Length: 381
Image 1 (tube, rainbow, N blue to C red):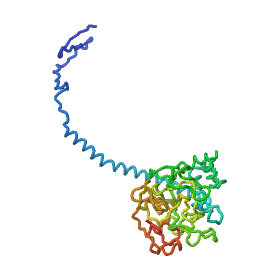
Image 2 (tube, rainbow, N blue to C red; image 1 turned 30 degrees about the horizontal axis):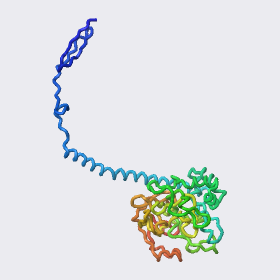
Image 3 (cartoon, rainbow, N blue to C red; image 1 turned 45 degrees about the vertical axis):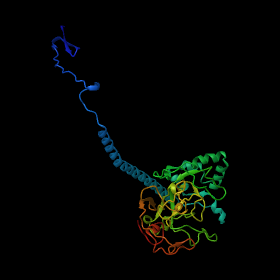
Image 4 (tube, rainbow, N blue to C red; image 1 turned 120 degrees about the horizontal axis):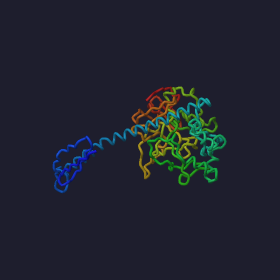
C-alpha cells in the first residue's frame, strides 16, 4: 500500500494529512487567520453594559413576581383538595360506623355518673370511635379503647408507667387523617391543658398531637340537668353531635344534604386533639375543644397575643381554617363543600340564649340553620 503525505502550514501549525490506497488525497480548504480581540478574547464581541444587565434582572424579577402568586395559589388549591379528601374519608368512616351500629358516634363517650364533677374527666371521643374504619385498627387496639377508660389511660401517661409511656408516644403524634395540610401550626397542641378534672395532662409537660377536624354541635352548646336523661335540658343542642348524642340518620329531619357534620379549626384558634375530650355540659373540650358551633362567626377575626392566637374563648368554640376566604365543611350525607366567610350569618339574643336555648330561628342566618338537624329550615349555602 502506497502512503502519501502532505503538510499544510496554517499560521505556523503543521497538519499531517494521510491518504491510503486508492482514497486519494484529502482536500483541505484554506483556513483564514483567526482574529484575536483585545484582552485575548475571540472576535470583536461586545459585553453587556451595566444598564442592560439591570434591565434583564428587572424583567426576570417582574416575571417571578407574576409567577409566584400563581404557584402559591396552585399549591393552596392542592392543599385544600387534600383537606377535602380527608373530610370525605372521615365521612365514609362515619357512614360505615352508622351501618355497623345503627347510629353515628357521639362526640364524647360519656360514661360518668350524674355529678357535675364527673363531667371534667377525660373520655374517649369520636375520632377513636371511627379509627377502625380509617384503617387505624392497630392504634385502636393498642390504646385498648374497648376495655379501658380514657381516664385510666391518662393516669398512666401522667404517672409515666411503662404502658403509659407507650400510650403517650401514640397520642402525642398528629394523625394525617385528622390534620389539615394548609395549617402549618405546631404539631403539638401546647395551647391548653387536657382535662380540667382528675387526672389531666399539662400542656407544658405532656402536650398532645394536634388535630384540626371537629364535629358540629349545632347552633349552641348544651347545659346539664342531672335530673333528666340523658342529662340535657331545653338548652340541649340540635346539631348532630355532642356528648352521648348517638343520633342516626332518621334524626336528621332537615335532610342529610342540608346539615353540617364536621368542619375544621386552625391552630391560631387553638385547634383540637384527636383522641378525647371531657367537659360534657358545654363544648366537650377538656381544655381543648373537640366540637364547634355556629353561633360563633366563621373564621372569627383573631385578636393577636404573643403567640398569634385568639385572646377570647369565642374563636376556640367555632370553625376556622387557613384556607383563603372560608373553610371546608363535611355534610351528614358525606359530601364536602367550601363555605365562604361571606355566608349569611345572623345570631342574637332573639334567636338563642344560654339560659333558654333556642328561642326563635326564623331570623337566624343560613350558617346557623345549616348546623341544626331538625329546625324545619332545610337550607343550603
